[in-house]
Amino acid sequence: MLVGPSASGKSSLALALCGLLDTNHWRISGSVDYADRAIDLKTSNEGIGVLVFQSGSLLDTLSASDNIGLAQSYGRQQAPLPAAAFDLVAEISPHVMPDAASGGMRQRIAILRSLVNGRDLMVLDEPNAGLDPVNAHLFCKTLQETCRTTGRSALIVAHHIDGLLELADKVLVLKPDEKRLVEVPCTREAIHDALRARVAGATADYRNEWKRALGHNWKMRWIAKAAGESLVGLVFSPLLMGFVAVGAIITGIVGTYFSFNYQSLARFLIPLLHDEALAGLGLIQMSIVTPLITSLLVVSRNNAMISADIAWRVRSSQILAMRNLGAPVHLLVTAPMILCSVLSFLLSGAVALAMVSYASIQTWGLMFADQPLDLWRQSYFASAGSAARFPIVVGFTVLKFVLCGLFSSSIATAISLKSQSLRLRMTETITLSVVLGAIVVLLIHGALSIVADSMFTAIPR
Image (tube, rainbow, N blue to C red; front, side):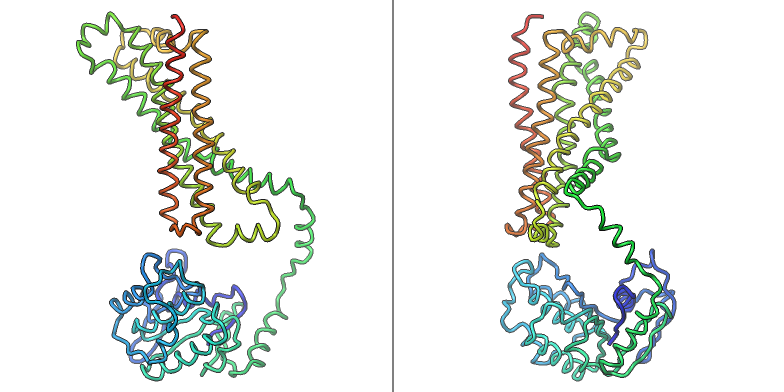
C-alpha cells in the first residue's frame, strides 16, 4: 500500500509505473526491478502495471462485457480469474453501458477489467471509492484470491486506508518534502504518525490570505466574472476573428474574380455594364453572401464551444452544485453565453464585411489595373448605399446576426443542459448543437433575405 498526503504525487507515481506519465512534461529517473527484469525509467516508458483509475475510465461506447473483453484481447497474458471475481459483477448486466451504470458499478467493472489484463502488477488508485461496504469487502476478498492464484502483486494507492489496511503486506509512505518513500509498520498508528510528522513540519500558512480572499464577495462580482469569461471566449477571441477574416477574404476574392471572368459574353458586356456588375456584386456580398458565410463560421465555432463547456459542467456535477448552493445557473452560465454569442455575431459580422470589401477592391484592382479605385468605391456600394435602401440593408443584416446569435446559442445551451438526461455523449452533444444551429442560421438568413429583397425592389432607384 502506498499512502501519503494529498497532492504529494501518489497518483503520478502510479502512472509512471504503468507507463502512462507524460514524459514531455515530467522528467523521470530511477529504475524498477521485479522478477528477473529491470526497467530504467529514464529511457523506457514501458509499463509493468495495469491501472484501475479512480474514476473507472470505462470506454463509454462499449458495454460492460466489451470493456472487459477488450482488456482480455490486448492483455499480455491470459490471466485466470478466481470465481469470486465474478461476484463483483453478479448483479450487473454484461450489456449495460457505462453511462447507465452507477459510480460503484463502473468501479467494479473497471476492477474486473484490470484483473483480466494479465499485467505483472495491478495498480489500484483508491479502489474502494464509490463502493458500498459489502462490495468493498468483496473487492478485498477478490483481490487477495487473485494475487494468490495468479502470483501477481498489487499496489494500492490509498488516501483513506479504512477497509484496505488488512490487505497490505507492506506500507510505504510518500514524503514529498524528503523526496523518498519510507516503509512503516502496517498499523493505523504508524501511518498516522508518519503523516502527522509531515503536517507538523509544514511551513506554509495561508490563513490570512484565505481571509483576504473571502472578504470581497458580492453577487454582482460573480455576474461580472461570468460575463468576462464569456466575452473573452466568445467575443474577443483572436482565433475566431482570424477564422472569420480568412473566410471573408476568400469570399471577396472568389466572388469578385468569378463575377468578372465567368459570365456569358463577359468580354463584351463587362465594359458596357461594369458599373452595374460592381453594384450587383457589392449588394450580394454585403447583404447576403458574407453575412451567411460569417454566421455559419461563427455558429460552428461558438456552438461547439458552448456545448463542450456546459456539457462538461453537467457531467462533472458543477451545474448540480450551483443549484444546490442556490446560485442561479441561467444568470451565471447560460445568459452570459447567449448574450456574448449575439455580440460575437455582430463583431464578427463587422470584421467580415470590412475584410470582404478590402479583398474585393484589391482583387478588382489587380484585374483592372488601368481603372481608378474610385470607380470601384462609387459602384460597389451604389445599390446598398442609397439613402432609401441603406437602412434596409443595414437593418436586415444586423437583424440576421442578432437572431442567429440568439437562437443558435439558446439551442446549444438547452441541448447541453439536457445532454446527460438524453444520454448524449460529449461528441454527440457538440455535433447536434452545431448542426441544429447551422440549420437555424440557414432558415433565418433565407427568410429575412426574401423579406429584405421584397422591400428592396419596391423602392425606386
